[in-house]
Image 1 (cartoon, helix red, strand yellow):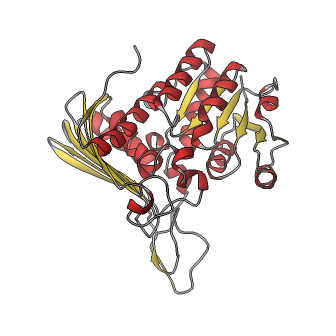
Image 2 (cartoon, one colour):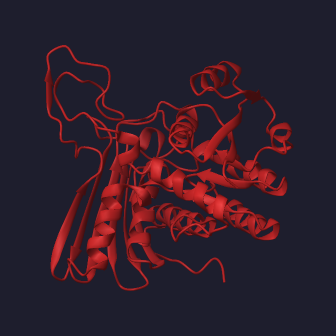
Image 3 (cartoon, rainbow, N blue to C red):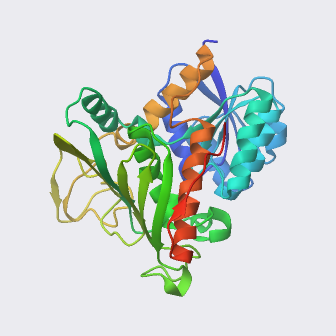
Length: 353
């Protein structure tokens, strides 16, 4: 197969990330998109020169010229859309989190196995160029044996009503943001998360800043992996100044620090401001560090390239980007909530054989 033909469910932020990454791939072509928001859909298909649009994804899935479906709809819809696409014979790329409940995630994995279609988990951190280079350094023994990881994703909150509503999102800052560093820690040392101790704000009036959010606006967890590595994971909506993704890796013979979002080679001072500096930055006045090819540096382009290669050449997605990985990371995130509520450490068991 030379060209992989893609349909996208969704028309807002995540859909745009997928569409732009796919536009940079010579073997990918987005042929259709679907959304129940007519105005948003019209803007989306026009912006990305997509020929056909639908308000019913089942009709779109019936097309024979669709090989892959990108699920970029709100989190609580991931299960039903992904399973419908798999049963229609399509491969699926599903945005994070894989689902909002562990039951849904397991059902999605089982559907992929039954239909023998690929269900690929879109975790962009694992394809970020800086992260891949760090993996090489660690594999070469550059910092010795990894002992401890600190990683966080933080910004000042989402504008999406779906992200702000616990019922739709499945939680708050941990499931929306902290899920990235959680997946990263597990992937980096290729080991399962076996123990979680978490703390969060309580949502609503119990939040630090975002009283209108149903989920927490601050969350943190200490996790233990099966190989003995510990990691501290944070996700919060109380960070101003733009999205802040920072990783620290401590080894027996060295350490590595990664700044995924503010690691730009540019420093700009502007009295009046300009159009864009970095995701979620409230202003571009004063000193800023404007991103250079932000979406490529965050891993979206390489992520989609890997998935397209898997479909074209009949390969399995790498560890960390399989459906089973999405389910395992969701299990750890939900354990953070359980631990925060109970005040106890939560032990995890394997989901799949």
